[in-house]
Amino acid sequence: MTLIKELQIKITMSNYNQRSSSYSSNYDYLYLDNLMDSSSADLFRSDLKNLKIKTSDGTECKILYLPEYGSQPAAIVVRIPVGKISETTKLILEVHDTTFNSTLSTGGDLLMFDANSDTYSNFFMEYSGLSINNDSTDNGKFLRARFVPNIDGTSPTSLFSKFASGQPLTNNRVTVARFKRVGGNFSVNDNATYHETTVGTYSWQWDYNLTAYQEDLKITSLIWASEEKSYCMFEGSKTLVQVSSFDAYSSGTDDEGDWKQYHIHGRLGTGTSKSSDYLEGYSRNNTTKIYQKNYSEVEISPEWYETTDFESYNYIDLKWILIFPSPLFAANGIPEITVTEKDSKQGIRLFKGEHEYPKAYKGSKLLWDANDETMDNTGLYLPDKIINKDWDWVF
Image (cartoon, rainbow, N blue to C red):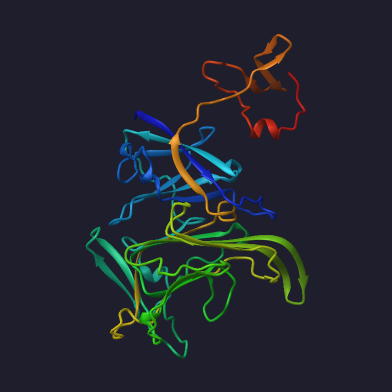
């Protein structure tokens, strides 16, 4: 195994706010879908399987490789310790001459349905609109979910998961769905309960040409967002990324039980980075008392008709769906994610008068080693370890 090059993934969060409440997840997950846009992409395999990702101190991050599909490039889901995340997070991207396998397994925090390999009845509520079909694009499978009206409510009318409930609300949620075909009128609720209403991130896309209103009007909307798109964001083979965040600022108890009030954040986009097409909204200091502690299910609802012939109801074709927590990235504005040359290490040299202190210790722990050639084992870098350091040690 030969290391060809070391690059850097820089993740800069906009509208950055520190979390005001506790969360239980030790890791954040990030869907990296724009790596092939890098100027160094000629070094990457098309499936990205010659890449490794590490934290700035060299700790390897577990990753899940997701294959390219039609015009949609390959992507990576990376698991990052929350202690390594800040307003500007830098990760090491290693390019090798070797092909790797995924080191991040699905299940637990990272939930996934893959139509190529999974039995859909284990993941979604049954109804007559579901069918599994052969996919000529990758010689695999896709799951079709067609709108089936049901006035008495005895069965679902859309794709309704049954494997996504139970994740803590305060850990936030990201839903990534890759479609073979999506379009027309549909909505997504990432905190859905069957026959009930729960508060989550809710998005909807409308093409009024395909409804009984027959009006030439198209919109894409997101709860909490102050604006909407004057077009349909999702048409054809697309990937949808939807984010919801609940950051508690107040809590109490009444006759209905324990409640919390949250700063709420939602996002909908064609990708994770600011380079994608997206909508975003906030409801800070939301006064709603929420008694729910855990997320419920995810519902993707095709609605109305497929075409203006009004003969067939609308449908979606799903390749896979991922659901995972994101206590920090989801709580803040959409990040700018770029791949650049790796920063060279920079440190400081410590003097008293003309005397240089080449090493510093706290007890037996080495904090500073001024090795000018390699800067190995320095332990102190600007700005986080200096500006925010509690100076209780001496040289």
